[in-house]
Length: 336
Image 1 (cartoon, rainbow, N blue to C red):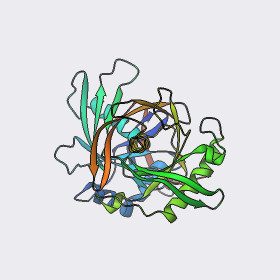
Image 2: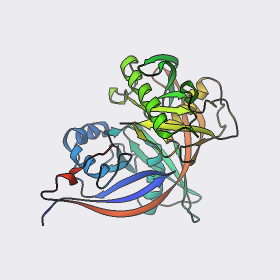
Image 3: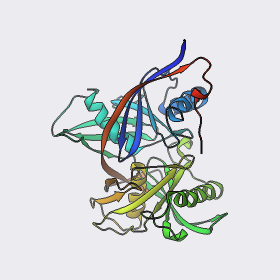
Image 4: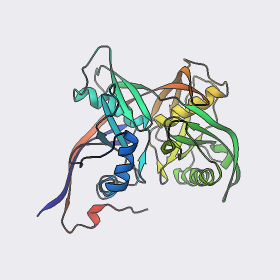
């Protein structure tokens, strides 16, 4: 029987969050810049995102990476990120996995004690540093694009919860941040369904009531999701918890690399954390990333910081996915 689609991948996870890296089978992706390539896949190849991310090959919370040709000379590789709704501009957990993948696949020359991998993301160039693997997976840290606090103590009106106070931060993508206790919730103990409902209400309100902008490109000016926190923003050596709900109510199993980046930027703007002070961030499944602001910079008119986030990625398998003629369900679907 004729196969009309055949795509291969390497699958990994970082802190429990999946990363499906496409290794073969994708058509040529046009565009002079990485943001143009992002627009191209959205307009011309979105059926392949659905094929890989949704059932029966994926699931509602699947996450994926497409390797593309970089347009920056200093980039070792370039990537597009995809999920249940579309295409992100940054993904920290995927960058951590890609750093290890690039070293293991010898895309870059290995160095000791760590190997630098320059990864061009839609938000800009991100450098991952991969430690030598001594068993159990390599620790990978990455330095972000300039991250900044966009708005502090912004009040938005939600349909189900009334007025809610949010901060909005950028860490390669924009997020709204809300202390979960505003909803009577606890990010470590409440039902995930309740966290999703509250975060989704905030996302919908911010999208309607707050106009975002980014100095570099209008394609970066969209709200990716809402992160509920335990409210512990002042520096502490104890872990602080994140529950990230992004795209179409997708729940991040990891602490969210770009979310940690944005949260550190907000904490630094408030004067709650100094440069170099490392914090531990915990996810809904208990996995952990570390994060710290490493330098001050600017992004247009915004005072910004570069942030270092670190975690560990593991392999879960390799696959070749096929779509046969006449298999309409195999094109991808969601059951909610």
